[in-house]
Image 1 (cartoon, rainbow, N blue to C red):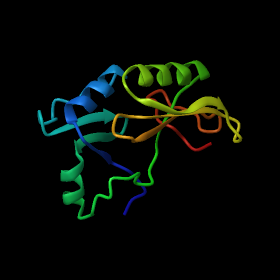
Image 2 (cartoon, rainbow, N blue to C red):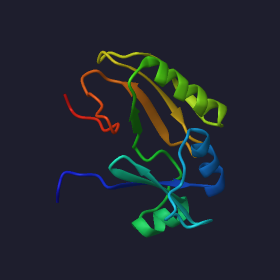
Image 3 (cartoon, rainbow, N blue to C red):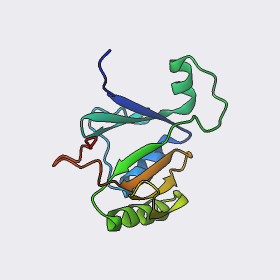
Length: 140
């Protein structure tokens, strides 16, 4: 298996609510999405999907305990101002700020919000992981 990630699918309780939330953050579903069933987003060299939590659990062969699944998503940006702006937009769209933006022990700056289904997103600046022109991150 190649060292690559192609797709992250988030299980959501209300697909339309989640699409609306991500739309406020500037994300638009790809035309290959299936209305009322699943939303796909081109995210650099990979894809983010939003799908019914129950359907995702069944398809993955797991029991849904309803709790946090031990995964946090991250979005790296170029500046502290970008971090702050995205956190404000997420809060205004109905997300919850669970860690205010601040300097980190590893020399960066980050904060965390959760989307309406509780999926945590870290928004970060990390000078040790430079961003490419397409927004891709490279280990420094």
